[in-house]
Amino acid sequence: MTDESEEILRIASKGDGVTASGRFAWGAAPGDLLHGDGTLEWGPHHVEPACRHFGRCGGCQLQQLDEESLAAFVEARVSNASASQELGAEQIAPPHLSPPGARRRASLRAESSGGRVVIGFREAKSHRLVELEECPVLASELVALLGPLRKLLITMGKAAPAKKGKGKPGKHQQPRMAADIEMTLVEQGVDLGVKGLTAEGLSATEAMLAFAQEHGLARLTMDGGYGFETVWEPVPVTVKLGAVSVPFPPGSFLQATLDGEQALAGAAREWLEGVPTVADLFSGLGTFAFALAGPETKVLAAEAARDTHLACKAAADRAQLPVFAQHRDLFRNPLQPDELSKFAAVVLDPPRAGAREQVECIAQSDVACVVYISCNPSSWSRDAARLVEEGFRLVELRPVGQFRWSTHVELASLFVRDQ
Picture 1 (cartoon, rainbow, N blue to C red):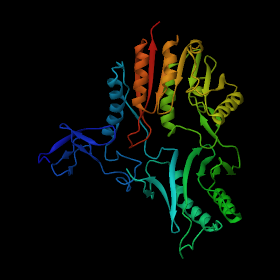
Picture 2 (spheres, rainbow, N blue to C red):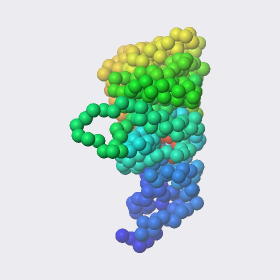
Picture 3 (cartoon, one colour):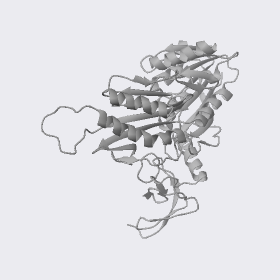
Picture 4 (cartoon, rainbow, N blue to C red):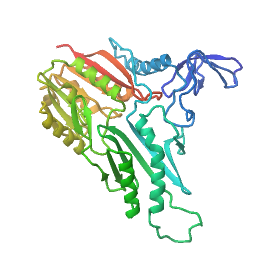
């Protein structure tokens, strides 16, 4: 072990601070001093974490960074991914950072033991849960439900009929409960989904209905292992994508923050303004399709998830927009080069693994403009290298930090092929 102190120069992709000699320190900020015994001396960019759970909760890794260092981290994740494949980005825009309290969806875990219910995120590098008493990342409407939801789950556990089994249960033993909690802010309020749990018995069902009504839920669904069942939905649940209200099937994907969605969709709209035909691949509910469609632009929206595809189609029909929804699995059946060549531009927003096969077809087509949205700079850089190899130029990169204080970074990118 060295006795010398070294300055933290940068933050690595997993959130650790790194010195010039390659020493790592968790919870460090650029400008901190890492002493020989492993302790940190805070520098000018180190701030007091915003949450009491930081350091245990695995949801955030970067609350010690000031705004300048956080922005630099987001930009570096994207620019380093570009440089690693020598993509030659012509312009990298300043990063967009979502503010605190902007996260409109969350996936939490609920577990009980001995009559006590804990709802929260996993501890870092552990299966243990951190009970959330606060969360400066989530929208206040979601945080406000955590306490009442704990009480509801306790009530449901007490109302559930006893399960028969071998042996004599302990005097104070209660059935262990485990469930996944999905919360999403929609136009009508909070959409709450509980997976891994069912309402057993009249008392449990009545408790859930009372909870949904008292807290003004937009919808309450349960999934005990056979798919979502709606317990409460006074009016059909929708999300606003651009100016269009789109049906929101339970469990559907939605960008983490509204401002993040606007930053990504705004980039696509700016880059493709006036383009006559666009293929929106991995289109989901139509985040980009509805941002682009209009009198001058027709959009094909291709999506594999059937419920999501039907929601997009229904919204497009109702809004009378030129969005043509296609139910298609682009991993098993990507759009072929001859199909793609009918479009002036392509937008794709694939899952974290990227879209190797679909990108190969784009590379072999006559498409001259590609807008690639990604939630994983590593898989994006691999796919981007294939486009560059076929004559595309990486004209612009826009880093987006929707998941504030985490190492999860997104981006919008524009590729143009000179004809």
